[in-house]
Figure 1 (cartoon, rainbow, N blue to C red):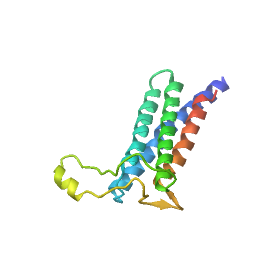
Figure 2 (cartoon, rainbow, N blue to C red):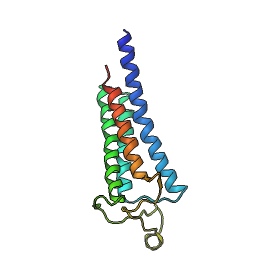
Figure 3 (cartoon, rainbow, N blue to C red):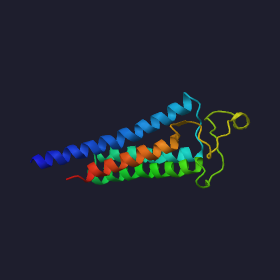
Figure 4 (cartoon, helix red, strand yellow):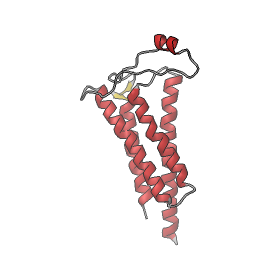
Amino acid sequence: MAETRHSERALWIAQALAVGVPAALLGGAYVSQYVFDLYPCEMCWWQRYPHFVAIALAMFSLFVAPKRLWVSLAGLAIIASGFIGGFHAGVEYGWWEGITQCATVIEPGADPMEAILNAPLVRCDSAPWDLFGVSLAGYNFLISCGAGLLVLWFALKR
């Protein structure tokens, strides 16, 4: 009986992490974009997509069995975002070459020609911000891989 409660609590922690960590990282990304004008490059966008998937899978795990499967998949999605962030950080640090062109975002409803002419150039190979020499992509790598592993550990804990 105590083992069942312990297992259910571990699953709840995994679900909370699988929703909370990607939501916090996405929130930070959008705050940096819209409040601090740190526009995302193409690889920055790539890092966001697995977080959206992770949140959806974690929410799915709240209602659909087998819950451990869905939350484990969410943990893997979080790790996938971390790996993309690690690759992006390597491009920023010049360890290897990136595989994308520079990109910019056109806001919905904006005149496309004016948006293109006035859009900031966002390079994937230069970090617009860092703390202690670690870029946002580097922090995404560290946080996402660590959190994804924690989600898997709690999800699979019996």
